[in-house]
Length: 126
View 1 (spheres, rainbow, N blue to C red):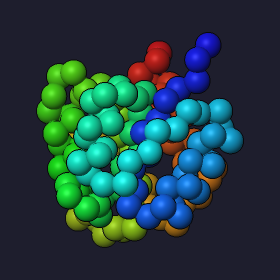
View 2 (spheres, one colour):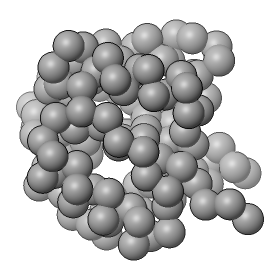
View 3 (spheres, helix red, strand yellow):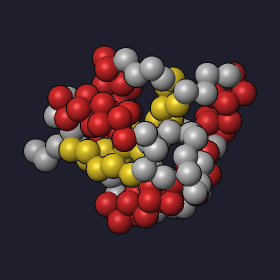
View 4 (cartoon, one colour):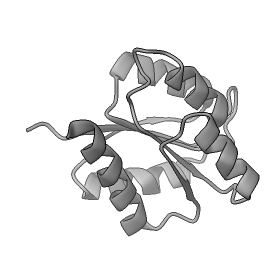
């Protein structure tokens, strides 16, 4: 069976590399984007199985990217996990309200990230 493809979006190359390494260690294929516009473009072109999305991004923030994808019938089934440094309750509520399936905060805990990804993928794959 082909591995699941995950779109990881973060404007920090260091964090993006760390996320990519964690996901690849879990057997996932990883596509990356560094801003909101590129995230939308790659999500639409690649149809990933899941999206890991930072909130604070150049061009379009993560909330807007999430909302645009979740309100489009073609992409709304793709699970989105917000992964951000914004830990305030209001930020988390906004993430869930815009359609995110989960909201994880940085610093990234590899085990927690892999667990969340596995949970969301198992929901969509039955």
